[in-house]
Length: 180
Image (cartoon, rainbow, N blue to C red):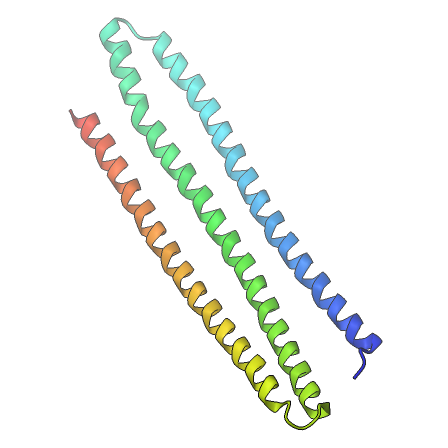
């Protein structure tokens, strides 16, 4: 049993495609984060100018203080929106990278099982037990990986729910503070 140049070429092609998929996912995430950050900076700059103009036109200390407290609510809302957008981009990028990893693991498992089948056909009598043991270990590893993936997805869903709850809590507190 020999490795052919075609097999090496196919393996290299699969590795390059995986690498390009990871790079594409990362570039897309960085691009989205850059846009989010640029928009946040632009918005903060514009708000600062508008707020400074409004504060400079205040007639007395009472109006100055009320203007400052009025500026807090929109700033909190924008900070929450920014954090949520960054979290969404990170979650999306994580999902894309997980898909790439899952594809590579599936391909690796398929190739390994194929290799085991070839080895078992060319191996001496009695080696079936060893091949079966390796396949059993591979199946157990795959089951553990699947369980880990499920637990990770559940943890991500819980984290997303907690972020949503925290966001609503902060919004509620900000609105209550504004009303008071």
